[in-house]
Length: 156
Image (cartoon, rainbow, N blue to C red; front, side, top):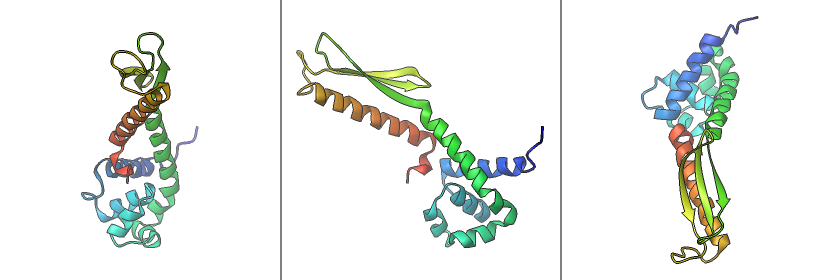
């Protein structure tokens, strides 16, 4: 079994990218900030520091620059896993008021819910479609908030 000779460098660069994704680049050294901007595909961060992509690659050096594509792919894979962590489902309800139940999920475990009735004494929505649309919008808003909390700096 062969060991990745770049594992330590990749781990370091990935840690820089994660820190930047959580906190921004304000507290990072110039080289770290440029690396994070390249890994996270944040041209606005390069611009803030007055660097083009070519200048940033030159500034961080050949060793780090060569690892940017691999580290960026790893970061994107981790981001996709984080995005898959949270989900929601909308379940039709029959009976009292009908409508929909919105189930909020973290690793497929319910962590909250909401009821969107379409009929009944406390009619909140004009019909089933309106109730569904509201449940869907609430689910998307919750999902966006949860994903933004995982890696807030990526929502630019």
